[in-house]
Image 1 (cartoon, each protein chain N blue to C red):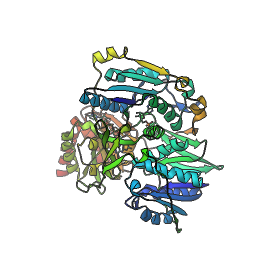
Image 2 (cartoon, each protein chain N blue to C red):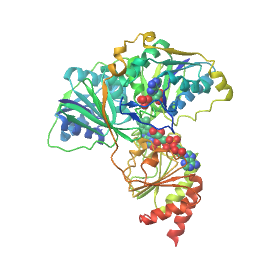
Image 3 (cartoon, rainbow over the protein chains, first blue to last red):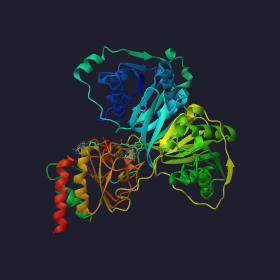
Amino acid sequence: MKIAVCVKQVPGAGAPRRIDPATRRLDRSVEAELNPFDLNAIEEALRIVERRGEGEIVLVSVGPERAVEALRRGLAMGADRALLLSDPAIAGSDLVATSLVLAKALARESPDLVLFGQQASDSDGAVLWAAVAERLRLPVISQVSELALTDAKVVAKRQTEFGYDRIEAPLPAVVGVSDAINEPRYPSLKGIMGAKKKPQETLSLGDLGIDPALVGEAGSKTEVYLLKPPPPRGQGVRIEDDGTAAERIVAFLAERKLL
Amino acid sequence: MKLLAFLEHHDGEPAKGALGAVSKAASLGEAAAVAVGAGARHAAAKAGAYGASAVYVAEGPDLDPPLPQPRVDVLASLVDQEGFDAVLFAQSVLAADVAAGLAARLEAGLNWDLVDLRLEDGRLVGTRPALGDSVYVEVGWRARPALALFRSGALEPVQSAGEARVVDASAALEGFSTASVMVERAHAEEAGPSIEDADVIVAGGRGLGGPEGFAQLEELARALGGAVAATRAVVDAGWYPYSAQVGQTGKTVAPRLYIACGISGAIQHKVGMQGSGTIVAINKDPNAPIFEFCDLGVVGDLNQIVPKLTELVRARKGG
Ligand SMILES: Cc1cc2nc3c(=O)[nH]c(=O)nc-3n(C[C@H](O)[C@H](O)[C@H](O)COP(=O)(O)OP(=O)(O)OC[C@H]3O[C@@H](n4cnc5c(N)ncnc54)[C@H](O)[C@@H]3O)c2cc1C
Ligand SMILES: Nc1ncnc2c1ncn2[C@@H]1O[C@H](COP(=O)(O)O)[C@@H](O)[C@H]1O
């Protein structure tokens, strides 16, 4: 069984997040990390392989060259190899363009299962899997909180606005997992040491046979006109617990006549 | 401008946001809607009153379960035949997957999480809060059709006097579109606490550490005369019932007081509780997004704070 896990490098949780007013793109020069929501997808792949006693896990990412750092974290968790799809012309790609690059690489790999995380923490889109599945002409199931797998099919539980559905799809299939599907493991020291030696390949648009006019800003069908500050909101009060937080909450609520 | 709204419905009952999408479309030009699956005709009959001049209806066994891919087939062929300039979707798990699939099928642009859409000099401009709502981005489309996915709660249905023409739509379904099978369909679980009418809500997230963590929230809620709610993360993990979930795929609540304990404050949670009168957040991570939209933010360990708070509230109410 071959499992591809799509992962993204995003600005770190503590790093300043801002859109560069000049390029109108996210500033990606800050400290970065592997999208935390993708850890659940990697973990799920590892558990499937462990349960089956066989299988290969390949990480696939579209991003700048420095995204190899994020991929290395996934390799340290236990993935077998990594594929970075990187080319200066890809920068600024929107959904149609990113899904095109990802689908091209996935088609070459032809995995039995393609896993996605719940959302990218920098885009909050939660949409990419459906576009990729469409390009690969494969069934897709999203928001999956439980996944069972046989040689031939997946059975998934997902939450919608109406409660929980159970959906079955034949393999190969595309699945987006929820951040509650599992508790991702921490890489072991051995895993971290071994990650550098695992196969890591970087592919350009030329390698993938993609016309640069179809990606990046040239190939994108959406655009950003302008950035605005958010509407003003009353400043909240912030306190650090020094052992008196409970008292201070009570005083705050009493002042607002909420007790 | 010709616009199409995705009229999502549950057994013929249109989703509120979907009717809002119809109204939004009608405010921008000539609006049509499309309803797919069992009950579509029933849903279609209701859409005229919200501004649609035509509702396309597609039914059939492959279209009945609320799965996205056959809906992509239906919408793609409608856009091809009728030449819509824009397709509007109100956020839902189903609508997001249909919108993104359609974007890839038509090589069309999709902007998501929109809170507004308007015409400026003949071009569509959307407003999208980004990066935890810290910046508002004005977005557009370089090609037609423009696909717009609105944030939960961003669209209000507006009644109008019209009546819609109901038109049968048919589409050839792709093999891969019908490969997924719904084995068990969601039924609204009625059992469990009702949180929508509560005056005070004490809500818990993954920071509670496990299902047993909810006991202390129940104590606090009892002391305050309120109800307990939860995030999707803990509902998905089986710590608390779905009926108590707040957010995009759960309930929308607006109590006088909302106390969030061990909740990071994801957008999908925020959309379900931002209308609360006063929001208090207890979180040990000073960078948690919830601190950006609460009235009182307490950086600390909920296990230290919540039991003490319960004691103090009890003492005050008792005395
Ligand atoms: C389509 C879609 C729909 C969704 N619908 C919903 C929805 O309806 N409702 C919803 O809630 N989410 C929804 N989500 C999920 C949402 O994106 C988040 O993943 C989820 O809200 C996170 O839940 P959480 O805050 O409990 O967990 P986390 O994000 O893991 O946050 C836990 C928090 O607890 C804090 N913490 C840990 N220990 C302690 C302690 N001892 N004391 C104090 N604080 C502590 C941590 O600092 C952290 O901030 C949806 C997502 C998608 C993609
Ligand atoms: N640039 C990327 N390369 C590979 N996978 C990605 C990329 N961006 C997003 N993903 C995957 O798609 C999921 C959803 O992302 P999004 O739709 O952008 O919120 C993420 O959790 C990842 O699994």
